[in-house]
Length: 63
Image 1 (tube, rainbow, N blue to C red):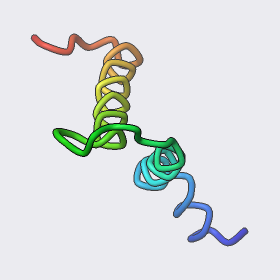
Image 2: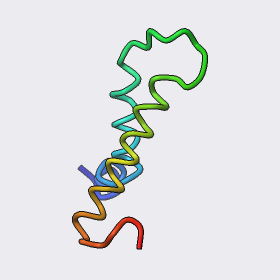
Image 3: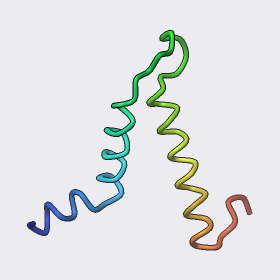
């Protein structure tokens, strides 16, 4: 695996792309109003990532 290919897949943007691709495989049975299931799942992923980052760095989320 080349270095550029390695960094392409092992990075924050690469992880976010992979997570979104996994979420896109989930069937959305919504009625089309409001937010899509993918948008809601990506929002949850963002919040979870932010909380995890705060726990790892031991810095408060709101100071």
